[in-house]
Structures are given as C-alpha cells and as structure tokens.
Image (tube, rainbow, N blue to C red; front, side, top):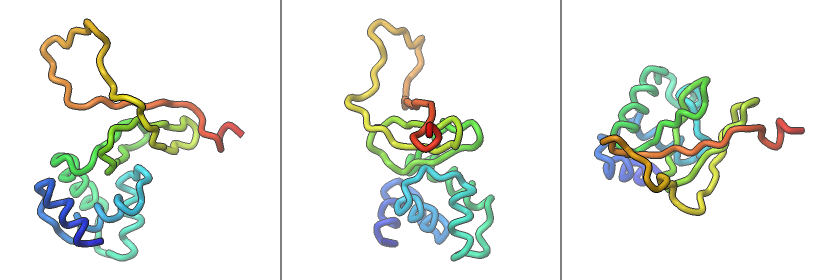
Amino acid sequence: MTSQVTEYLQRHGVRPSAQRIAVTRFMMENPVHPSAEVIHDALVKEMPTLSLATVYNTLRVLVDTGAVTMLNVDTRNARYDLIKVPHAHFCCRRCGSLHDVPLSSPVVLPDGMSLGGFEIEDVDVCYRGLCDKCRE
C-alpha cells in the first residue's frame, strides 16, 4: 500500500514524507470524509510524535496540490475527501454524518446565467437533512 500512496502523492507533485504517506494512506483506507482530528486520533497511536498541527499542515499541502478535496459541508469543522469521481454529499444535520451521493450527470449552470467574469473551478453539491439513524 505504501508504494501506491507514494505514487499517488508523486502524481500530484507532493514530496512523500512519513506524515504525508500516513495521512494519505488513512484516507485511502477509510473513505469516511474525516476531519483533521479524526485523522490525528487514528494515526497518533502508530506515530506518537505526530502533532495535530502536522496533520493540518499535511492536509493543506494535499488540498493545495489537488490530491485531496476540502469539504465545507459541515459547519463544525472541515472534512476531507480523497475520491476524485464527481459526486455530491449528504450531511445529517443532527449527527453530522457525511455520505457520498452519486450524481447521474455533472452539475451544470442554468442557461443564461451570467458569471460576471468569474472562472468556476469546482462545484460542491450537498444535501442536508436527517440520516436514517437520526430519523428513527
């Protein structure tokens, strides 16, 4: 798995380090839209000297290079996504769980919508409501 992670990082222009490999590997093995805190809590057991600041710095590098997407769907904290296939998200307003939702077609702007000179780089679609567990 380490060689796969290293190759992924290099494809995105990221110099592999032990911390970057560990964070990326965690995200590949756990596609749960983790926060920096969740990643840190999971990795600090195997890397006791890993600080939360290092995890945040690593995620910033991964986001800046396009290796990871930062999701702003949770008002409590940023969450991160490694999946590069276009998809939407569902965020439970009660428990905060975040789930991938497949898109049947890409998101497009309505005809005639003026962008006013802006260049769109990304579109986020997030549905909010109650998950199955919270509805019960």
